[in-house]
Length: 96
Image 1: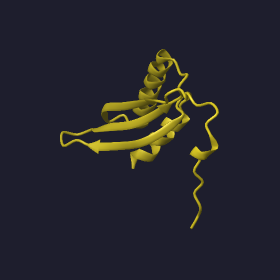
Image 2: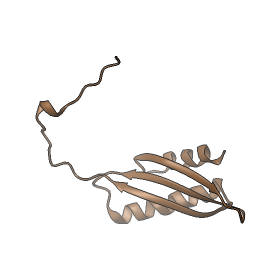
Image 3: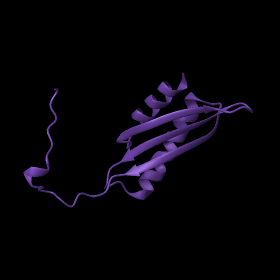
């Protein structure tokens, strides 16, 4: 459906680091609502996040012109305070 095309737009937008859940909800009145969770780096200025979100909206409207509303949830990673964490905090998972 449209979800894969929307995900491609999100992944191709400069400044978007990660893409989480993407949803398309059809409305009874016609059209649909697009939702997406987008990840940004801890050093991304707020003004840049706003500009990137506007670029994402424009890209979504280009591939999905029937979108009545676009709801984007930005997630900004917190700065890490542990530049040199102790080695006992690492977890290595096996394929067992």
